[in-house]
Image 1: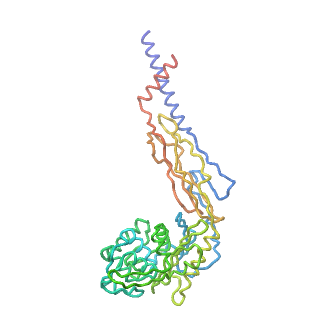
Image 2: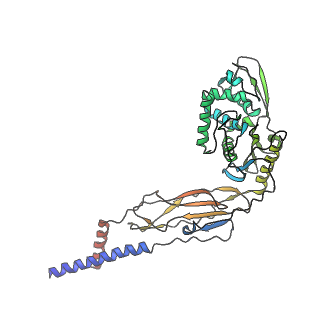
Image 3: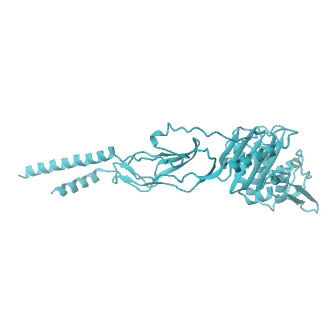
Length: 420
């Protein structure tokens, strides 16, 4: 009798085990599929499920810029988001003349002290025009020399600053390149602090715009570049020198805030401009914008770029139509579904009416246990006119252990007693 009971119990437990394993396999094979719905009310927003990512193609919106630029390379940037609004060969590596001094100024502001006394070496004093014409041994505060650097673009001043802050021109160039790397300017390399033509000294319109958008966040930098005139006083002497801002753009457009002119024989006329108006902050770059006698071409091109940004772009919230993230099924987990989340910070971009926003959810249909809280399981990608703008990780908000033999045994026992 007891033998029959044991055989019966074993049979029941085996059936329970089979049923339990079948239950888990059934749930794993029939895991809930997340369906993303297309929001047809706004043709800016196109949503695609994960399986269509590879085939996702959106034709790039035609650039309706109704102007022709003289510049060899040009770019217009939304300084708030670093989103490119317009570019003409904006990623070509080119010489940049005295726009180099944007980096010289920002490194000096961050590494030096405004009240430092800077002494002109023989090497600094020997630099070619444009010059402050300071004599060897002359001393000025770093504060005064930054106005000399940015208002009248003095080459001897740039070298004096570099030697003071970096120990030498070479040492300062290392600081400049370190800062470029920190800012992600991957197609920029500095050799000189003044931008005189040198082998291996180059940037791109895009990198230069990124640098300027960073620099104008520094209040002292903006204060210096917006000053109309400044008087320098030589330390230990009553001798003074006046400098006047050569940046015509400051009076050309309402809201202009700088930034820097430049010219060398190789680089041609160059200009980096910045403007704040109508809630927008724009940065423009023109490189190789004519050679003598066409000194005014850079102002024309800059004005065209800025007006294009002001008149054709408006701020659009790119993530206002994000879909709800459903819990994701967990294969062989002690809990069958895991909640997931992503950063949902409001973000706006300057876009044209013809621009298209694509939001693609790269989220698997299931994940396997064990699962750690905070584990990245997918991403949401934002595309502007078919080009990736940014990617936001999708992460779990709960830890889930994997099913093990002890867990199964406990459930078999529970199942058995539920039948008795």
